[in-house]
Image (cartoon, rainbow, N blue to C red; front, top):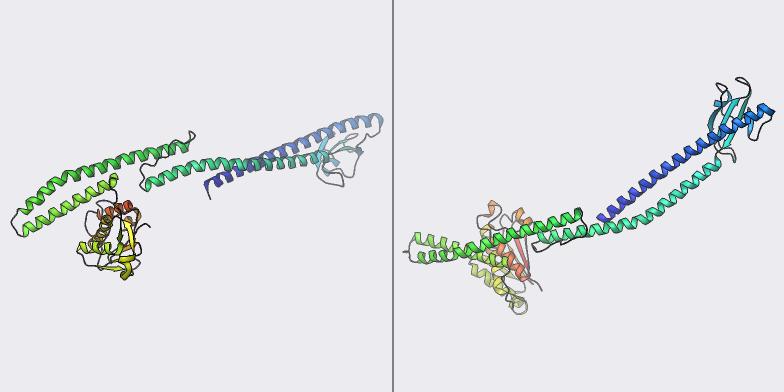
Length: 409
């Protein structure tokens, strides 16, 4: 249930409870007041009737001697004082009433009694209850839309903060909530999210700048190392050193590429190219034993073309293939169908944290997937994002990692 409806339901429930509590209190207080006034009226009427009877020997209107309907508690009063009792019986038009009684000539003599009918007052109490119920329903009908509207305003502000946080999680570090109306907890949350985004953006920019600076600084000495390695006499030591220097140069080039992607300095150079041919050539350049399958291979080179940057597409495919061989298991299969390229290996599959959080730099995930710098998938994901393509990583039900690249139309 959306938050606005929860708040509206809470407000409506609160209003109902308040109306019920107020109505109950008014009803109880009014009923007690009616009974108290009836008892006072009966007491006073009995006093007047007793005086008249003793002076003249006649009964005033409403006064009776030993009435049959007199409650049992008043038939034999304990003393000569006046006493009252409540009678809740309903007889025809006569509703609940209050009786007042007193001995005429002392204990043991006849009892003079007066009855005060409370039906008119109780009818008024009933009308008051109905009026309060109707007023409560009207107030509830008016308050509920206002509560929904107010909750909607709060919900929109919270949704704005949530959307901003979601954009930040998706990588949009420039997303900000901005100024929100009011000076309350929601405004504090929005300001905190913006401060968090500012701090996160500064840290990431600092890390990216550091990566770019390190890569640029290492490029020259690594080139010198490679040139010096070429001067060494042939032999096993020279081959080992040359291989390590090449690995170091590849790492530096990867870091430079990542820094350019992070800085947004890269722009694709698009062209219409046959997808199957580009993928097959990219796989062949890796020099790794990989099975390539192109759907409708006889017509693919002439009919299935895509508008993309072929160099960046080759970079993505080669990185996925190398990653599959390095961290997965053979056989490695590449399938091209329509605008989709699928690279699958038969190894242990992608680690769970990689599937949840995406590839991270210098982090290869599970130990069983081998060692490495963890930059290949990061570069492939960055290049795919630059091309407007979708790169999805998953595991096959029967084992093995699956990387699916979908190019835009």
